[in-house]
Image (cartoon, rainbow, N blue to C red):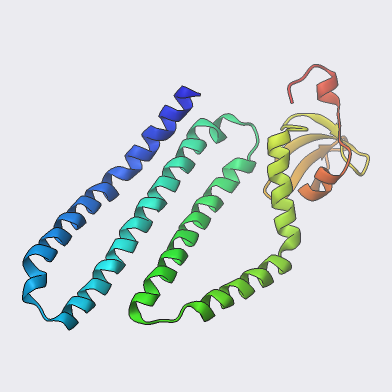
Length: 214
């Protein structure tokens, strides 16, 4: 556990070097601004500069959060995903990384807009309605992705196992994908099954019975 913690910390530290340096430069510039510049400029200009400084601060903070998340994802890819036989986590990791970036910068935008007098209540409501509509339209896809995660965690089978799938065929596991998994039937046909169907049904694993590793 201690080694894992050290590895995660090292990945995060590497990712934080650049944003921390930028933060120190920003802090030094802000202190100089408060001491040397603020007393010499009009109040209206001070207000405008405060908006711009606040915007820059939010951007830097978002950059730091993004780098921390990237460091954790990179650590997982190097130490966990690359050592598993399933391709599911290899496919999910880039998706999660992009999703993290989108979420971070959407939140940053929602924080910045009020600085410039923009009412974000309507925007948040629109995002909520849009997210709900997307979730309803893609509920089968989301369910299959979640089922893929559960298969990866529970490991009822891994690549190379001989199993009986819900439809009754005896197959060999070829791949566990994000939404669907692929199997090789006895007649050499490729069978593709949604992960949700696999997670809801009984799976007979013959490799377990032969002493194989699941």
